Length: 351
Image (cartoon, rainbow, N blue to C red; front, side):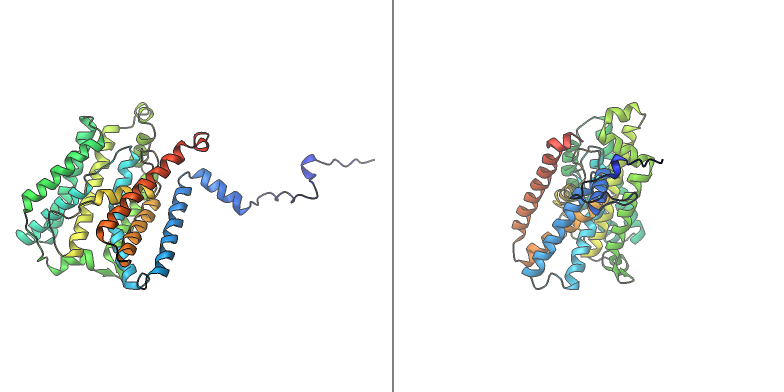
């Protein structure tokens, strides 16, 4: 006489939904797994939702927001901050910060104008000189932070003033605006209908994402921000990586200055003022950890678009540039506050 064995797992309450067959998973379950595997995903999704909400509000409150020309202007403006944001995100990933970005942009733009327009050295020479200046600024920041052990915020506050001062020493009140047409292509040109600044920003973002996840140096920088002592024990070249990340930031700041100069067709010592605040804001909004160890380049792109759309919308609504600064400051406070609250919440501490 055969006896049928009934497993306890095969028995379920008739009032309950039957268990899911092997290999299947609900949409909610997949989402939970995705967010648990990537702790930055909720921040990215939250930022994307905020961007969508802002776009919807501006669509119904303005007549010109969705016009192709306006959307292109927003994307081009955001592209410059995507480039800066990638660099700032890499710096913050090492538990650092660079508030001298705007001054590096201004100094690089000044040298660019002085070389191409003032000295008439040629476009290639001028661009090379501007990139070299950006590299020198970043290298100086890195050396001071790595070897003099000055906190990044203090070191770069000092160079914020010093680099801007050098720009004024070099330029004075001069405005260079007689750039040759081929150079202006960098800021105004198109490739297959796509503005050049957007293409450059896309390349920088793709490089940044690859660098963080797939290179030894990128992973080493993340380990420094996550736990510097553990990274030191593991043999990570902390000083060398710190110098490298600030040098990268300097080059990207110079690149942003070159694009902005080509876009406006002029170079002044004041180019890039207040850009450091924009950059920090978009990086934090996008989900990168303020104190290191977590970075998201996708979040940088979304954060840059949020600020670009927000500033454009405030302008379309007729608010002055002063009110735009007020809103930007509040956005920074709210973004940092939410990140701090999330990190200190009991659920965050139990993960």
